[in-house]
Length: 200
Image (cartoon, rainbow, N blue to C red):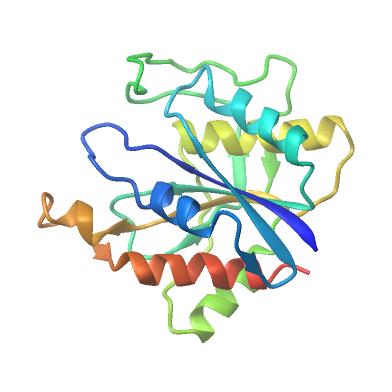
């Protein structure tokens, strides 16, 4: 059985709940398709998140990696096409606010996802789950871990399925944010399981 490293994030900014944390914890240890899931929750910390992701990658030695994050105002599950070599934006959970900083001083300007993003979107839509490819992972923690992972794989000439997927907010968040688009946690979880089943 192959191994898949699946990561999410702890709550961040003013959100008391992060659906990616719950999904990763629920799927940890389960078998989906060809993969046994190794779930890890990453800190919302520019200086630690990527480092911990890479550490877990080498410890687990997976055949695939999917990193998850919440994009609170999106209405679809959105596999990201590209990560850019910039960190910028709101404070992380440690209060750090980077401004136009490179993630890797000697890194490429950008890296493209190694996940089958078009097939993922097709399979999700066939299940009645709204999905679309996104061409921007932003410049916050999500982009930071996506870029760092793909940079590490590129440096070591590894060609495994790997990339980042944003999911919408769940109902738990919408309880305090009534104008926010939100999905049942069970549907978000089904979407992630469907994505994993697309991987060979």
